[in-house]
Amino acid sequence: MKLKIWQAGEPVLRQRARALTAEEICDDAVQGLIASMRETMRDAPGVGLAAPQVGVPLRLAVIEDAAEYMARLTPREIAERGRVPVPFHVVINPELSVEDDAPAEFFEGCLSVAGQTALVRRALRVRVECLNERAEPVTIRAEGWYARILQHEIDHLNGVLYVDRMWPRSFMTQENHARYWRELSAQQVRRACGETEQR
Image 1 (cartoon, rainbow, N blue to C red):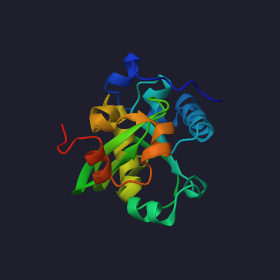
Image 2 (tube, rainbow, N blue to C red; image 1 turned 90 degrees about the vertical axis):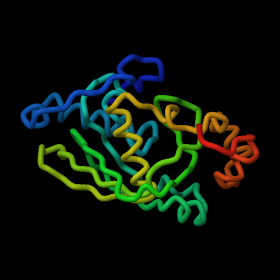
Image 3 (cartoon, rainbow, N blue to C red; image 1 turned 135 degrees about the vertical axis):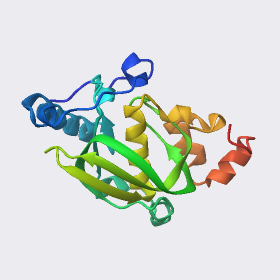
Image 4 (cartoon, rainbow, N blue to C red; image 1 turned 180 degrees about the vertical axis):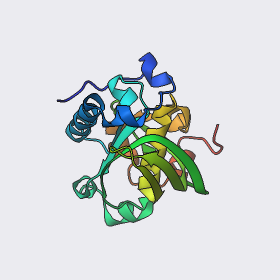
């Protein structure tokens, strides 16, 4: 069942979500939520979806970066982003640690800030300790675009949107990004927007 994706301004998107117990994770209600979130994410389409984005304040997110999503990117864009296919998986009660805080800066969007995008600086490599959909402990080590997805989705679980981390002067519609800015590097965009320091 596809779910409504809640948009910026909804209070649930600004609250810290609560952790789930192992019993809750294995319950039919949460298993059904996971299935519905998977369908909703794929229909959007998106590469991640956190439970607060569908109005549920739980520390749960689904992630999948399918190869088909990369078909519209050039080989250079794929390489710059460190983007590789990521199979569907679930992260529950995640704890994120930065393993390499070298900045990686790219345009980022969000299903809860529909139609917009902006430059966001994220850590290059992260480690996530979490539970999977069977309440089993999992350690994820990620880099490149996958690390960005994890940071973005875990932010949602803490009531943080990418607009809190963006370069303000780079905020634009996705349509205008594709029309004017897509071929430019982050440095070129900052220069063109008249911004040299992150605020």
